[in-house]
Length: 584
Ligand code: GLC
Image (cartoon, rainbow, N blue to C red):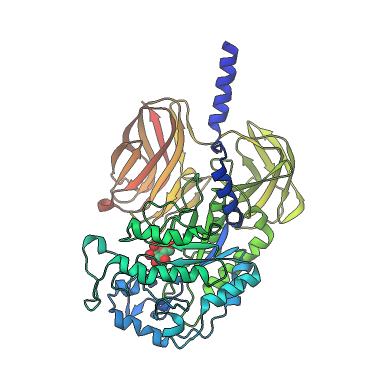
């Protein structure tokens, strides 16, 4: 009995160390949902297109640059409806070539496209019978670009989704707008107000029917910003969507409203979520075209982001904002083509993969796939260890082969050491952005977690194990090498926070210390479970210094999440190498 208890205890420890939770039992409903989601989960990578009248002012109104995302210009610059409407008279995107757009998406390795059929400005980019305020009837263009796109997608085998702003419609008396819930009145006094239900019945519902019926079967209906939405209105629209059981919808119809997938916007969630999710992300800052927005993410950044997302089990919907002439900006085209070059050699490590079985890998990410009784672990190496030895923490099992994905004849030697697998890289030229090494393991690999764990009374939470949560818009903190360590740099924005997951086996009171460079005084909040510690960091000059940040009580053992956030009123840039918890 005692022996059995010990065996069970050990077994429990091994199981509880694993980072990926065991999947719940399948039911008829989950099997159906799995079938519905199959193509989307396989795809992993799609293109978002924000295109509308706002491409014409492109972020500038009456000679003034209007801050914020360009598709919000009507609201931000308080443009009266009649004045904004007049933009349509000149909207003539003659250079629009649906096939070229679809081919570009395909070349980048994207498997689906979601385009704005109507954004918050209320202007339909398709030929609508329900409202004359549409690209066919109100512009000299006299074409239906959405129809052309649908045809090109069919031809090229790309799935298609439409974005539809169901609640916000700044052009209509009953449409909602930011601020409506707080009693703010519409900026245009000439726009007589009407009820939401009238707008839903007269415009949103008929238009949704049109986009569902007229374009040859949609794959995704992408709702947005349920500001001022009611459950009743949401249900009416949902009833329409329900007539297309194979079509996916997102979670933005109403709040709360799960839809088929959730939509983290402009950030990548820290760890895998146990539902379907899709990160929507801009390549620069704005969704719609903004001529002076040159805040472009690098190709390396975008490839690593796609991989990061895939390694957590999500999709990336990467945005382009075409111009009023109908062209995707060159800066986007270049990046998409470069991503495509990487995908041509490595897409096997993205499509149809599932989340990493590792908690964190200091040198990169991992995706995986089961093939013929084997598991292929795709190790995405962003930073090659200087000694050419890649340590795969906690990996056991029968390794059959290790090779370079882009050149499978390039093999690697390996050995096991101290519970880790060590891969020896011969001196060959690797991809500086991301080299993918495939580890073929018989059956399923056995992996013990490398989640930091509070042992011997202390725990080191290093920068490379932190999840950096940057705000959607603004200056982003980054992880940089610092000798053999890593450091969080450019933590300028007070909305950026750091999070670590770790495991605690011994509850108690812990001192919090941090190796930090603070050239000015700052305040931070450290949050764990339901407790918050306010720490005042008094600058000790332009050098890294161990700062005492206070004490915190951990009352229960288990997996924990610790959050470090700036106090907005008192924030100056700091750099951080680690946080340490030491038992008192
Ligand atoms: C936001 C914005 C919008 C953009 C969208 C993309 O909610 O309102 O302009 O279309 O996110 O996710």
